Image (cartoon, rainbow, N blue to C red):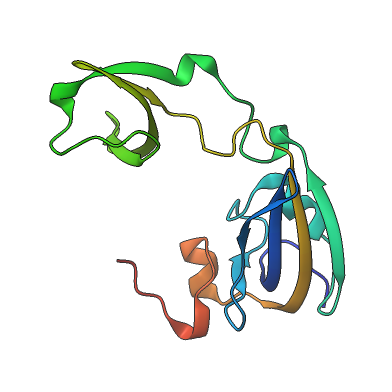
Length: 159
């Protein structure tokens, strides 16, 4: 069965940036996603189109189809008063946007009462190199299609 729109795909992957492994699936814990529903980055999803279980391949994803280009306007200065706890440079924190969505950001610098933060994804602007093995491809269930994502082993708890 080929990977196409509305298929549930299980895959093992290793993500390398500049020769360094930055993420990978754990043995026995593949990434499971619903194809064609933006559950994974665009560049990887495009390269998976048409593949079948057993396919192993490498793909390089440019920033435009990965986590986007870095946007220097996404670097902002916040007040120290906006933080409840101690602030650690390099740590990721979360802000709530006006529409209720959650926005992760990274603390870049603390200078007195000013905290410089970066709302860019940590891998924005980076070229992503994936080693991928397709383990399984199946039709999505009606429930998975309704929810817009795969349910692993029948688990559909949305916590």
